[in-house]
Image 1: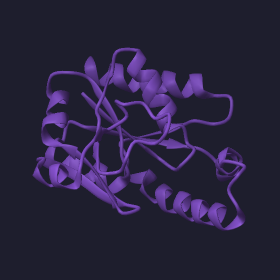
Image 2: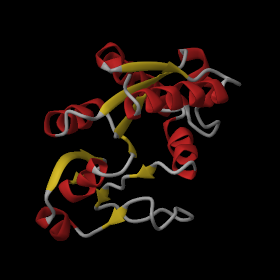
Image 3: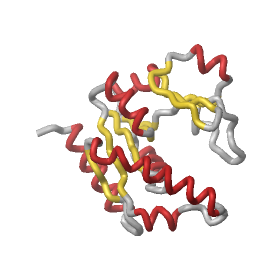
Image 4: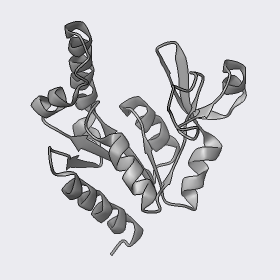
Length: 174
């Protein structure tokens, strides 16, 4: 099974992905040409040079802030025999669903006022405005996902329980 998490910035995708990874669901790693950030885990991505990225059999990719991010075919194939999770944007999710129709998309819903509260306090008004525009853009895919799960303030456990319910339903179809 392959779970693809989608949602606006601040909706809890990374938090939920990490928790599910600790429960035994394998986290797929994307390749990226950007350098590793200070303090970032070595296994957050496959950090590669642009030349190596171009040689990799990438099935989903995006250019973001002058760096490539992409998921390799070999990485996605892991999900054919192992339960996996990955966080992608809508375009990436569509690319993966076309090639691997067994993937399940889950949109993490969160009210805008809560997402605004979750923005880093050091963001100036211009950066906040850009993030809010991105949040509005990210939310356009919500109705096209297989499932919508609310991840509201102080309800992370409920969101995780619902995702685990979806996971069990797909692993043990009636």
